[in-house]
Image (cartoon, rainbow, N blue to C red; front, side, top):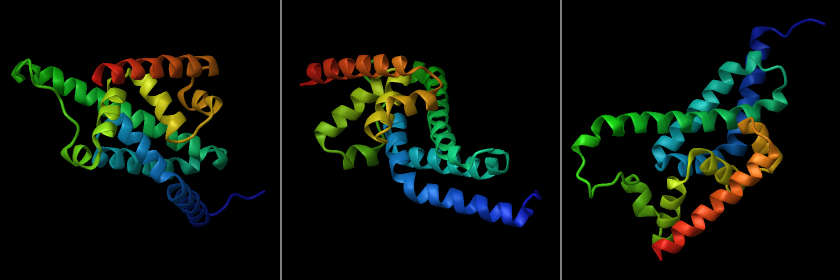
Length: 177
């Protein structure tokens, strides 16, 4: 068996990545929006995940696992955004008045209805894993098994995390009303 030429391999990688991009980008952007809180950042995270997938295609043994790879990349990209923001907030927190809070981007706030804005803020207050699980479950319509594989945890962990996350959301939304 002979290996495909670099040009053929490149064309194959482009085809796989392009097809995945067209089929899954909107759902991934929606998930990243919930996880990051602003659309430009969400779009950047998703774009970088697909660029990373394209670069990784020659090393990816099974192209059927490309979607899982890009989903995990989006989650990791969102985590990186949060780490960076947290670091920045710690550095600049001495300049904030006690009554000031970090807000969603103006674009996201203007576009969202009041109920959606409150729900997104409640989701943003959830711990990282709960945010990720709920976004994957309800925005990407992933099964608990798929979420477990993407996050590297057990199905039981996904189920209990989702349950606790939903309970926390319900409490937060009840307090806001």
